[in-house]
Length: 292
Ligand SMILES: [Zn+2]
Image 1 (cartoon, helix red, strand yellow):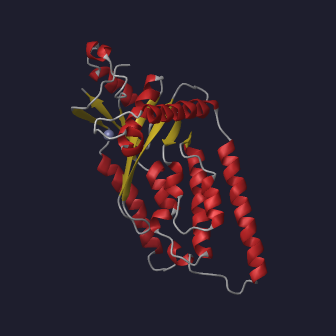
Image 2 (tube, rainbow, N blue to C red):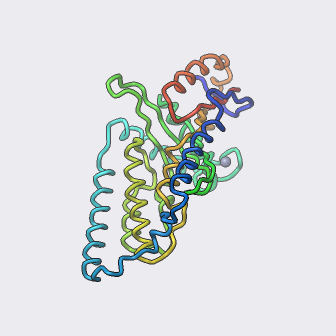
Image 3 (tube, helix red, strand yellow):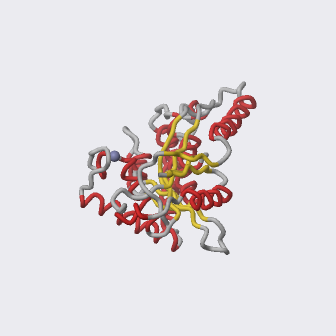
C-alpha cells in the first residue's frame, strides 16, 4: 500500500502517550510505597554472599546455575514459528544487502555502520514492502524507585493473518547481543552472551524468556565478582526497553520510493483506517502515522 517517505505531518492516534507513561510510572510508585521501608533492594542483594556456605558446595551450585542458563537459552532460541522464521530471514537478508551496497542514508552517513535509525527505517520499509505490518517502535520511560529513565528504539511486525492464533507481535532488535554485553563480566556470562544472535527476531514471550535468563545471569555474575550491578542491567529496565508502552511509526524504505510513489493518491484516510485497526489490536503501543 502507498506509504511515502519523509514525513511532513504527524497524526497522533491514541490516548496520550504521556498518559500511558504515567500509568507505567504509578506502578513504580506503588512499588516504592509498599517496599519503601525495607532496604532490601536488588542492588544490595548483589553484595550479600552466603559466607556460611561451604566453598565446595558453592562451586557445585554455581556450575549447576550456569549449565541451567545455557540449557534454557538454547531451548528458547531453538523454538521458532514459521512466521518468525520468515521475518527473521527477510530481516537478515535486508541488513546484509544494505551492508553490501554501502547505502548512504539521508544524513549522508553509511547506513549500516553509522546510522542506526536510518538502517531501522530501511529494514522496516522492506518488511512492509514484503507485505508485513512493520513499524519503528520507540519506548520511553521515566525513572522509578527501581530503574532510571530511558528510551529505546527497535522494530516490530504485527501479524493478524492467523484467525486461530489471533494477533502475533514479533520484535526485531538489530543489535541484540550488544544490549547484554558487559565489560569485566565473567567467562560464564560472556559465553552465554556469545550464544545470542546479533539480530534478534522473535515473539514477545520469547524475548521475555531471554531477558529473564540474561538478567539473572548478569545478577549472578556480579554477585560472584562482588561487584555492583548497574540498574540498567536489571530485568525491569530491559523489559521497559522492548515490552513497555511504545510509539509505532510506519514508513517506506528510502530506496524503494520510485516514480510510482508520486503518482499514487494521498493515502491519508485509508492509512488512518488501517492504523486505527492496528491500534485497537495493540494494547501496548500507540501508532504514529507519517503522512506526506
Ligand atoms: Zn541516517
